[in-house]
Length: 233
Image: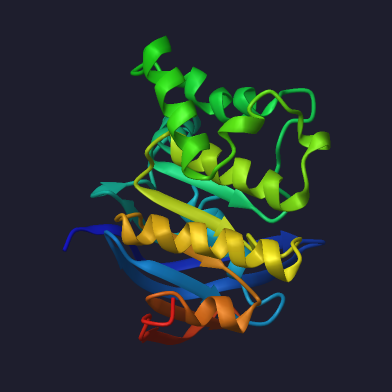
């Protein structure tokens, strides 16, 4: 099976007040196409830092990050932004919808930066993504008119519309009640069954254990990498 993500001996450190803090140390990970990987661990263990590296929002201090057989280390900012927009779909805990854009426009916006898509392509992708999360009927509503669960479904549609190689979800149920959290997880599992590759940071043990693989971090190091029985999902 094709390897989508490969991290080789990756370290990430931060310098604050002349004190260097090692956030990630000797990370070795390969994620194959179609895997659903949960990333767990206590607060401050490096989960969000790892997701930021995977999403090309940050760069490693040392080591290699290969995304779709392309080494990202030497890429300039413009190329990183282009790959991020085309290859990676983001789902955030806080939804990150733009308040003065309606649902359709929020999903459409990232696609408008894609030179490879025509206006008709964009329209089709937006409508298809909204229907997939059952939000097509709310396409002209604004984020303030939606519940938290509905906003997260729109955020998932935005991530899907670009047909990314990988979906990165950072605590996607963290701001939701149990009912809406289950709806969001059901959508993610349906996407996974359709072939999506997903990496999800979560504090929720139940959600983590419904993935096909669980990676646990502690003090910036991988302390567990386990294949899971996902029949319950």
